[in-house]
Length: 45
Image 1: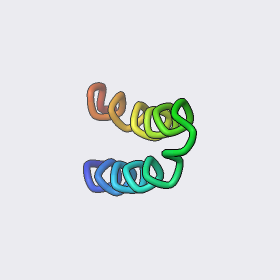
Image 2: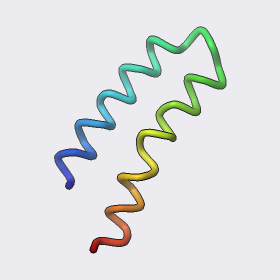
Image 3: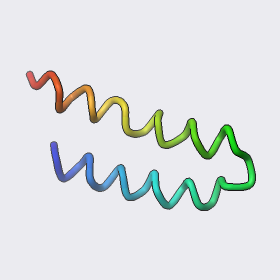
Image 4: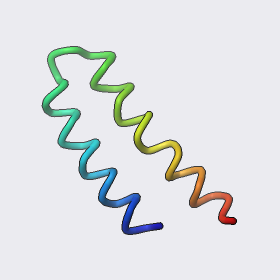
């Protein structure tokens, strides 16, 4: 699970650079990608 979250976080960081022209999209997209993994780490099954 941790490796998956690290991989998704690096993809979110790269996407923030690509989406930098649109402020709200560049902030919202990484949140959409990272929140499910963060919740999964907080409350493991």
